[in-house]
Image: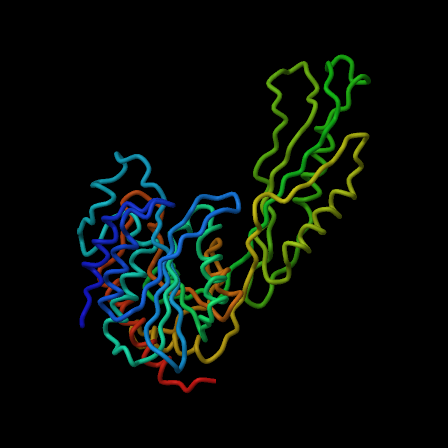
Length: 384
């Protein structure tokens, strides 16, 4: 049976699935996947300090090679409606583009993949889908736990594609073979509050805070690797909460974030930070350090025949080989990478999270063709 990815994307956009509200989007996918011969399992995870999340797992086929497609149906809030030219949850066609929240990130990837599945006979190979509704926010009860559930229940895979918007300027110009990690931290300095006219009765935390900021920002972490740029630390906030000009503050706080390559882990970065802090004289203040949130680990998928097969399918449709990229922020591919090789392959993401988010209709149709061609080539290979 044929499935029109454009019509499906319109229906997906109509579901206002702002994290973590499912808003009927997984019901829609379950109906479509069932019609395509998939066995669908709905899973809700909760706990670990985050909200409950609805997820979907589906599988079709038995034996042979196993391909996983992963993605998310949740979207970021649309923001001020006045910035949109039309309702963000009603698909609007204009100048060959589909506008709507989630059009680029990443309901289009899901629509294209389902259309590709519809173009393949059920006996082509084993296809698995892992769809979450929590990628844009906490990402605690989504893909991470869904992949854990899959592993416990024997749902392994040989290769995975995440449908995030990976193209930079035009469809197929790049695929992501890895991502940098993200590590955030908070440094606190406790001194003694006092009057600026009597500094001997106080202990100002600001000089120590400034010295620590310089120590963290001045020291390069590395020079980059074969597939990653140099890791970088950015100071994001320095605050003492003191509005008075005649008061020495009692304490200060510094926030930072490190985007890091495959030379580092959260553990080695924490040790690096502690070494920098220890090198700064505390001057009688108390220095504290905590990791903020859950770090995202860097990953690099092994390059091999499956990546080359995907690149060949892209080249056949787009007329050029894609670049292999590790750029951008983080994505749920970091969870998938713990269980097998994964790449991100999707549309151009220039408009994601913006008002009037959009994709080209021709790109959406082209991505569905790329996915279908890749799957035919992937399943034609003998299992290892």
